[in-house]
Image (cartoon, rainbow, N blue to C red; front, side, top):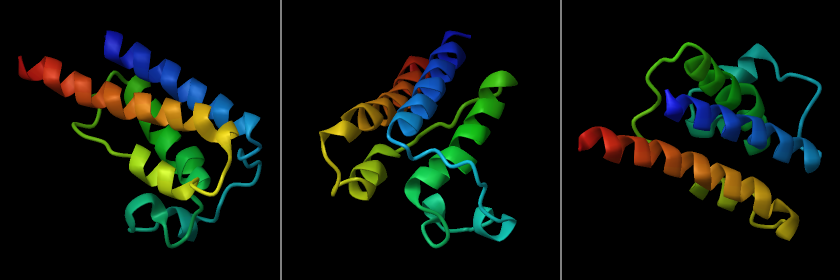
Length: 113
């Protein structure tokens, strides 16, 4: 499916953006940190850790298995809040996240027609 291909490209871009900003971690968080029930695991992880260790792996699994993607997603507002103290070097990362949100939203509007 085209949507899965587009999502895969955005996930790869997201990883590249995180690495370019030196936000990619070689050390995985503990299982306790990963098992947070809070949105974005805000109580145990930095937002970039949530992206790397929870969001990207889960979305990659859905894409690779051609499973149904989420019906709605609003990651961009959290990204803006998390990185609001940063400079314009974060613009590419924020754009990639916004494009991912938009891809999911557009998928739903196409499906509804």
